[in-house]
Each structure stands twice: as C-alpha cells, then as structure tokens.
Length: 148
Image (cartoon, rainbow, N blue to C red; front, side, top):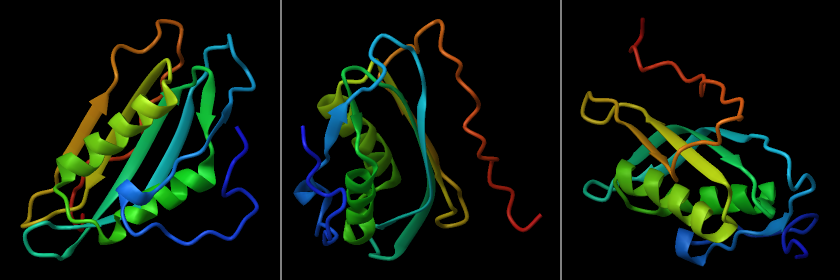
C-alpha cells in the first residue's frame, strides 16, 4: 500500500467519482483509538441553483487494518467543489465511501452546513455503534446562531 499522492504534485480530481483515496497500514492494530479530521471550509454546489454551499465537516473513525492518507482525503474532499449534490448526499456519501473502502471499526461524519434559504442543515451518519471503550469527544461544532 504505497500512497500515490504523498510527496507528489497532484491535481484536484474533477469529481468525487474520479478521486482516489489512499490507505496505509494502521500502525496501532489492536489499539482502540479515534482519528478525527476537521474540515471547516468544505464546499459543494447546490444541484438546483448551482450556487456554492459551505459546511464544516467532522469525520471521526476508529481504524481497522488501515488508515486513510490525509492528502488523498484532502483531494477527495476538494473534488466536491464543482460537484452538484444536496447536503445529505454529500455528507452521507463521504461517510459511506470511507467506510466501504477503509473498513474502519467505526466511523461517523457530522456535516454542519451553513444556511441555505435561511435554514442551516446539519447531517449526521455513522456506520454503527461506537466501540464501548472508545473515548469519543463531542465534535465541537456549535449550532449555527446567525450573527449573534
């Protein structure tokens, strides 16, 4: 499992379907631990208007045999920049793809979307129940409160 992108120049994939995610061996197999990726500037496009949508994503997972290589994840998430999909499709699709390919012991994703039409939309998905002995901190994203 040699990463394709790490240490290499790589263009942003044109779409999520064209993006390749790299996985490397878990250096701590047999240890229950949480990996968190915070993506505070995620963007995609509204499938109806074509206008940009913005979200703060938080991806938490407990590795199985592999971990996702972060540069390939960055390129995958960046490929949504010109991708038209509803908030629910983006959030759940990212979680399901990571879960299917990486096969973690557990994965959850929180999509904290900024208002569209005056309504913020938060979308949550997880692969199942978290391991009982897992330290699982709050995702740390406050609900949208406007200009306060």
